[in-house]
Length: 463
Ligand code: PXG
Image (cartoon, rainbow, N blue to C red; front, side, top):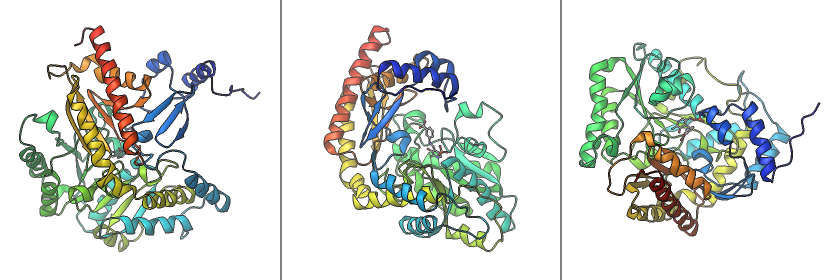
């Protein structure tokens, strides 16, 4: 018997969907008992910077879906490119000496957009698979060079590199490591360059150097001859938009160079204009050997990820025979066709430069004006990511157990604004198409929601 799912659009239908959702759909990173009590928010449509829920509420998507809808919603051109590719050739594999047209074109396009020294790309379907690829690739690289003992990969606490076994191990999320015996062996974590958490009130540049030298210390402890690579997000995204001091990355680069260690920039969030450059590495003066990408490469319209492979690694791999690694959907023609069209949009609308020189600085200035609010402490931004710390009106920190960030997030959503909570830090990463007047609209909505949050906190006796 066919099950009838009622058409969406009314409160009652939303409830029916929520019941079906709760009965059958296991969501990522979700406490299902809590979800069953509250019911999932059913998102049905998107256009530009806005999404709509099943009850017809319009919401500003301050998180670009999940850091990915860089070109905004409702881009018919991407839809058409994907549909035409599905008509022509929906799938063929890239194994067994085969290739397909969009994958070749996208590989060449990415090589042209990447920083100097990148001519090759390995495709996956997600950022997690791309970071798994990195682990296998850097170990293969050192094996081919006759140094198989170089297996250790160094990452940072509070980093996010995905949710597969290798991705979650590379990431530094304590809650993920606590489940299922992670991290995997030979993955080591150092402190993050998080000034407001680690050393508030100290000189940022001195702290940046200190945080980078934790890598040098780790190398001394582990033995540099055992270390294969260092991996880091130029700006930590899921960790709460952690923008490192300017001194941090050049010092990390110096240390990697001094010990011959490969440097992996995980640009899954920072790539494709998010920081006002095609790659965040350019913003911070990083010269990586490998670049992880996903999300913004297709603006999230179709899943696609991959690794840009610098010549140092590509040369060794190419001379080393078969690299026994790959996925059914590596170089999926539909995903690559969608990516090509998405990149054309970013270029034609000059979105990367606009974020760097125009809308990014405007967002920074407008967002900084929130610092005057009694609940707001530290505020910062970089391109089209920004964050603010919720504090008590006297400037002291909230007890994390109060869940103030989640209360604030609920107020935001109730009032038509998606803002993500990471503890007491509230963060945004809006679509790169956001216009100055829409930035004004967003900041006004955030301010209104902060006022509402303050009232809720007062009613609870928290402030
Ligand atoms: N690296 C980075 C830097 C990421 O942000 C991944 C890898 C993994 O990509 P996939 O496509 O496998 O999810 C990510 C993903 C959050 C959140 O809560 C962030 C991500 C994923 C899920 C939640 O901010 N980023």
